[in-house]
Length: 613
Image (cartoon, rainbow, N blue to C red):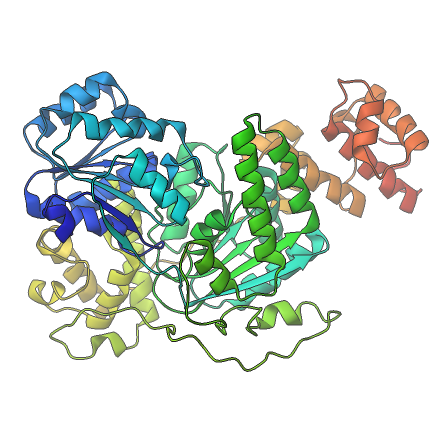
């Protein structure tokens, strides 16, 4: 902050949850001018601007999602110096008219978020970020600050060069997060992964959980598996509508559902502190990707688990996709990332140490006691696999840094942060927050962050002055929500309680069966359930093969059924790719899966459904 207020170029590398946003937000407020923030994440920009406005700090977003009239209004207000923070996408900044307009804005500094995207050596290189080099040319007097959570030494040097930072002040935080416990297990099959995942999710009594799956199909399949197992979960992936993605994210953020299963599309900029575990179901593309995703656990400083459950075929798939990269230099960089993540997963060197060394940090310790290599064990992993040989955990000295609880702000009420939280009050406030968020069409955490809600329950303020002692409640937020919150607390003390949650919906298999019984086609079931057709076909095929659902010839038609049946007699039913190659192109994998499931069931029980009716 001092560097930026002094007008110095700055490069900041801090882990997820380290406070990077505050580093440019505070100088912007103190300067009285406008900080222009370049971010690739439209949803994140909107949320951050909403949070700032809720604190009484004028902020705005300018991107293509806004109506033309709104864009014009934002641009005019910016020229008048009406914003302390203004969020733009790199594509917007690249427009010639944007540069001309920005010359009329009282710019205090430029903040480049996710700055590793500017480097070809970064794991998320975005060509449009290269155009940010024009900032130095057009605004030579403005300080430029680059922020990232995951940049190796090579990427950091590239950031400095590409942005033409001058004698930049560099702040590189430690990459060691001692409260995270890294555990890696190679699985023999997807079935084993799901069994371990179920055991793991059932073992966490509190907190939120993130599961990363490699594909959209795996996301939906995993969510349905968990729902059928009695574990409520929501999906998140790029092919969902933006409204549904936001709704699912909000339900997870507001603790309505504890488990979110997503692709790598989920997580950037997520501001949730009490994530107790992040579980990966495949080998990530790079250590940088894994560090960033796993780092969404334990942002409150409390012990949290980062579990990687991978299969040998993950490596094969990564290798296959790398070979499809046309650019030789990028292909070579991808191979380097591949070999590094393989070594990370397979070596018997302390996981924390490997991460630190990868990012150019040289720790003065060799063992951590917080990873599987150094002896940390997860009971649910061991108990779920009785056939595996149990290895006793060696006694290992911990490194100097040890997990600690998050810092608490002082309060006039002594030791409020040690008071127990009344679960009924906690739920009553969450209900109020949820309703308020729906009324205002904004994320629940913008209304009141989880940590603020918990502190409110502990302090239970009796006045607006006492409400100001709750972390997150400044003058503006206290004025906007304070009187209503004090009334909510009075209502609770007079006996009001949270309304009962609606009854749980039918589990996925029951829902699918019901929709098919009602006469809906497979395509209609997929649309009504918000799933890809492939996910529904896979689920139906499993039910047919188990004998829990009757095969319907109308799904594929007589001609296709006969052709697939004949091919199965010639080639067997184990390799669907061989069957697909031998059949006419109009016969899809969906058709083949359904017929094969029926033939397998019929082979087990010839008397069942033998006539295909």
